[in-house]
Length: 170
Image 1 (cartoon, rainbow, N blue to C red):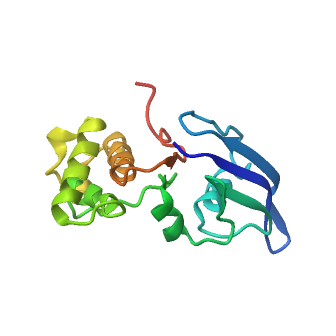
Image 2: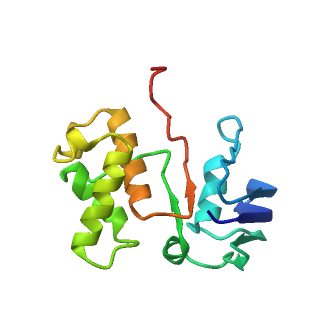
Image 3: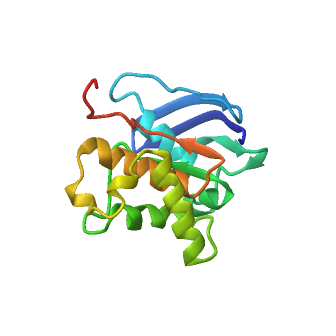
């Protein structure tokens, strides 16, 4: 695993402060939870960590490297992956093809991407649905597919943004 250190990050959108002086340390091999009410800035915080936009102030370090100004695709190449609160699957593509997209972060060939995707699909329990179109999946299956897509890139840091949102108790 990799260590993540977020130091005193703030992000402002115009006059609105969405995240104010937030810090967290997440150690490799551990699960760290971020808990707060709706509108508290959890997704914005994840967007900062994953590089979708830079903080107004503060620093983000990944394995001791300052990634504060680094764009998202370079953070992905370092081993960061995430899921999103609002899923955006390719609905007219199969589960396998959706997951292969995530595997290309690590894979250097099509065969390797398929192998990594198949491993991730198996890991989340969707092997029986690998050939099904994403548009035919339930919310739970879509969430699992998104998790498989993130895992297929073999991340060292995995950010899960409300992975269980919209799912029933079972």
